Length: 294
Image (spheres, one colour):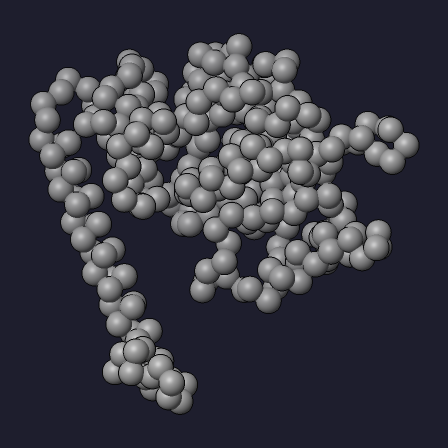
């Protein structure tokens, strides 16, 4: 039964609605399967190309040292780091992306998002941590939107002409991509706090140190990247600062510092998350401030 057959008649019944929903899910599953076949074909084609470079998967990075160098695999530009892990040039990925598929770059342990107003942004991702350990395109898109519209949330001047530094908090930050991109890209002073579950805090802190700290790194790859991009990492024109901490939705003990000037999140509305806790968390962290001001 089609939707058109119901025009002017009684609303869809529960059984009919479930049938339509089931058909939509089947179509999505078929699309996902076709995408997976194409990914496997591309990976097989890449593996078949003769090369003297050791191209290993992210999870197969060993402690042995190899010569770092840039490689172009198909149209993906990437660099092999000292330990053999790979860093993707994100701009090259965008240039040839033919369909929406975040998982196309999950086997790169680092992604170079290029040089921004406040210096270069490089993000480490860990597929072993699940969805939270992966860089999602939605985070990049949201951050670009907020940077492009910075004057909407960062007026920088209070009622008495005093300079204000807005405090932004990101929920479900995962790798910290969106928050750190905003902190690097804003043209006025701002402080961004990335938050997520305890198991993701070490990854967020690693990316915080890689992109904002002037101290050296213990990890060989991160130390190599900081030395390579030393001028970008210490760019004094950067106006944003950042930090990372644990914040569990619905846990009031994690809400220290609230309310915040801006609360944002990317790709956190999904069936595996708790939308009710998410809504209450947004309210507790931000809306109480709005009500107090009204």
